[in-house]
Length: 273
Image (cartoon, rainbow, N blue to C red; front, side, top):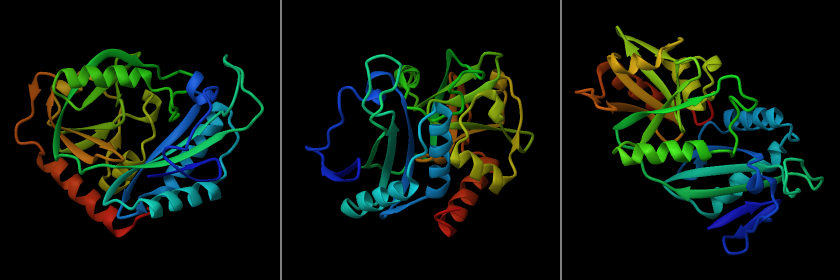
């Protein structure tokens, strides 16, 4: 496996980031996960736009997107896989052990891991912790993922693949690495960005391609929704057949099944929508 690190390809054994990198010591970094099929990235332009927005939100210098594109192409060419998780990580770089940044400049890492197609349906759980819709890094895709690690471990303990959060005012927000949609009376709804959820790339495309509505939703809508589905880079559109102890028989339901078909068709027509 080849990894791009600060300007060039490295072997896995020689790719090393300093133990004083701010991304490691305080989680001062942003990242993107891009789906790659047969060596071709999907929606790369949208992902790079969000990488820049996240970097600016943290006060990091804008990433050199030409270099990022070169890095992605080099890594994909070096290790072509049928379906891959292309990970772009951009951190504050070498710095002190506290929250202040150093002056050495950012670190850029691009790596690729092979993955497999997700199942058509999955189970999710809700968790007692909340997303802070008014936080300093709300809406930014940062490397500070410890909260997600804890919540996802809770999901796995209960036979699920995702954990769903409400926000501080009891509204449905998002998953640890996904956005959530519900079907009510035949219409698709998803929490708006002001709920505190991430502006997911797959979320945005799903809204554009299905006409889904952004709606403030109580967390307990999951108890009554006709259908529930998740969206993310590697899930695409994935139906939910269980929320906590509530079974949703017949998943994917007709509205979700149509959304899955539409997404697959439109994504197949344009690799960089």
